[in-house]
Image (cartoon, rainbow, N blue to C red; front, side, top):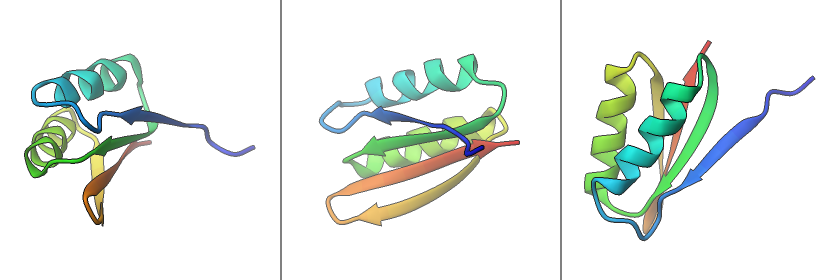
Length: 74
């Protein structure tokens, strides 16, 4: 059985909205994977910092004008 992945699309949103969107989802999850899509360096840094502070692992992929943050915890 494959693991489901939730996606939060925060592109076009200005801070702190991407952080708040990610925080709501992460707090509702005990473990698993969450993908957050953002299109600014500030949102990338702030969401990464939040996830790490909450104990999640973060992998960032630069996709040109946007960033894909793969956040996971087992």
